[in-house]
Length: 274
Length: 274
View 1 (cartoon, rainbow over the protein chains, first blue to last red):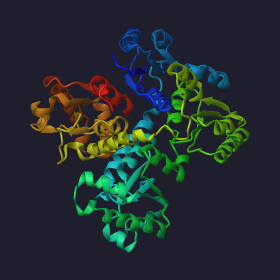
View 2: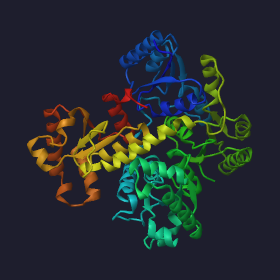
View 3: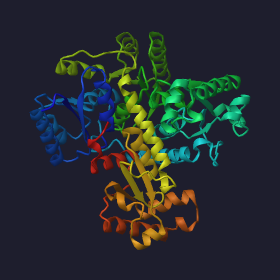
View 4: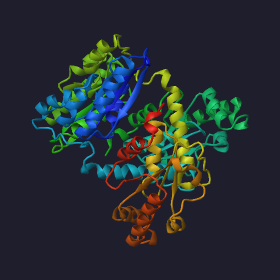
């Protein structure tokens, strides 16, 4: 017996949609903690019965009614899972009826349909974007800045790489990144390689204390991780951003998602999506 | 005037949740095409009024009622956007009431709450996972396989890197990857570096024709991209997987999301999440 209520995400496909909205909803109930479980690729009646049995077992074990977030679309599968003892919350059906009415057409309702053939090209583009981000990471030898949609600049460990990769994988944006180092910071000048691309630049900054923490984990006791070095670099990089009129964001208390989508909104990239 | 109906994703935060479920719902209406627009960080009444005006303007321009997918939680903001001329579909409110009843507690209902302080550690872990994936990409000089949760193996261009990065950024899984090359394929033997970690290995395979396409884009007319070379490598790598009892997946017609979540399900990783 545990006192944590089970929360199930159930889907005939990846369950990412169910997980995303389900987690958003559960964070609205901050005081409690839950035991999250994902049942993916529930695409047959047999698997639906297994899912129902697992949900009912969790009910028995915990003595608390499980919560089920579902994106199941095929009725036969949906009905089996909905007949379990949990609170069944349906993310698809609730909205498909009003949408059908508004659009004047019927839903498709096939298993795993959320990734249609039409999106193959979309996925291909995103894989290219991920490869681009990795090849153009950290101001390395490959610098295909003419192909970049965006070039992130900032001091070392300010979150450029995770942000680049997130924008690539989620939004198919081609992002290069370039770490500004001592010589550039000292003179408040843009590296020559970046000058032609000022319209593509976006800066990241971070509080020196947080930067120190991150660098300490990587290189304890190094000059690189000393607080006064972090303070110096952050002061200089912000001066460089202002001097070159580069828009920038303080990432200190932000998640990767927040940083990435803030940049989409601040640049024109939100409007030219695939 | 355009004949594409506008679809708005509106959120007081990143809008990723609204985009994810909204896109899933719209793919159920495959015959029609839509003009997608995201209004992120709508966290004040002033911004809500701007959002409402943009929605109403889209209605006038297109002569079609826009569809609005919302994850707004603060009533004052929510009500302004809901008063627009579009079909307002509410992803939060619809579900919070039954959840409140089931959990016997009230929602929090503050702006941007879906990323609480409690998740800072979670994000830190995911950033570490992304850095790990990049450092341990492509069987490079850094091979921290003892720290890896999973090591993806497969021929060059079979999707190892995007899958690694996706698992890192979404699920905080530490994934290394290793490309199997000619000598290893020839003798159907595991590289010595991988032998101690067979329990962490997962294989990716792909149809030779698709592999050829992908390699052609990268290195046209090379030996590497010749169909017979791709056929040879795929045949050998699958033999190697079987011979060493490594579970594997054919990624040919799958999205990054599907590959990544299939692997979570097939391994024990789904059960040890943060």
